[in-house]
Image: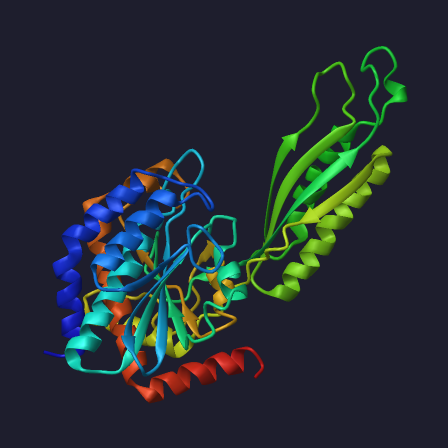
Length: 392
């Protein structure tokens, strides 16, 4: 039996326990850096599956590293398991969690039973939904011994090259002066007016922005009572673009909207950027192509196997990983009534059909990982593509 058949056989044999693990995580949604239940469930499953598990790894209580194999090159597969506020696993991270664990197990069993050198590392990445867990993994050296990294993500289409946007986030604050809104409004400086003016300026700016740019804002504070002119207002904004250069340009333009609104209303303003910018996804061509071909072998039609770009997905800290080691982040379709980040997608992430499609995509990832581990030419081409895209 080939290594690839061994991996598929192992994943099929574990499917029932993986389904139970997925539903367990799905029924216990936890937000950024609070994924204690998911962390315990995943690390227990991996330890029971023969992995050498480090819990609370890399300085994060809910991160982990699980390793099997010896010698040879090392490849990482990543798990995500945080949820969204209010709507739970509306991005399907319960499925991403089991896909990383399953691919790791399939690759490990194939290597060991086939007598092949190589190391598989399953990395547990908390806080993808805005907490930058993978950025902290990078900073703590999680990828220093890793030659390539992979993960898959459920969504609304089968894509090898999803357009993953770089993102920066900020909190902006406006400060004015309180006054009685009826008795002496001329004595006040309305911080909410400044914020609303900035919000509208950004909305108008979108008309003259590139179609790939995305800007979204949410007002967190706009005053205390209608009859008090607010001296303080606060909002949060996300700014996204497909390349760092365009993102920098849009960040500058957004800040100019804030400055103009403050000047027009006589208020002061300040801004705090998150310091955890998510990079765009630098999809590795040779790895994505190999994943796609393995996916086709399993009966899935990869709609952009020729290297075309997929539709905009959003943003992820996997983009940061792709600028450190050759990486891929394919998307796969699961039956759904609406897109990611909706209650309908939460329901889809718990469906039997979603699980089965996850297992198929997981097999493709395991097969592509085995290709990379056993094929020096593929490793060389993946590294050359990475070096070329990063100017090395």
